[in-house]
Image (cartoon, rainbow, N blue to C red):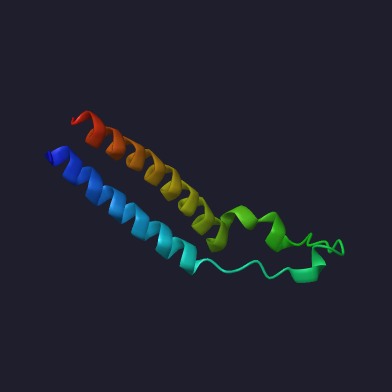
Amino acid sequence: MSAFNIVLTVVDIILAIAIIVLFLVQEGNDQGIGVVAGGSSDSYYSKSKGRTLEEQLKKWTVICCVLFAISSIVLYLSFIKAW
């Protein structure tokens, strides 16, 4: 096992833990039946939604998931090809 594989394994584990933590910190979607009934949420909160903490957590969760997928694929290929 090379140093590259060890570093990539550690990065993969850190990203996996970050995904779990980010997922657990996010709040649930509490809209309930209002979505089915056509409830409108045209408020200041919905207009500035991209700047809220919840949206930032979602963005970082997606970033960590993409990085985790890439690092897992590279780690798999490095073990198969013995880089």
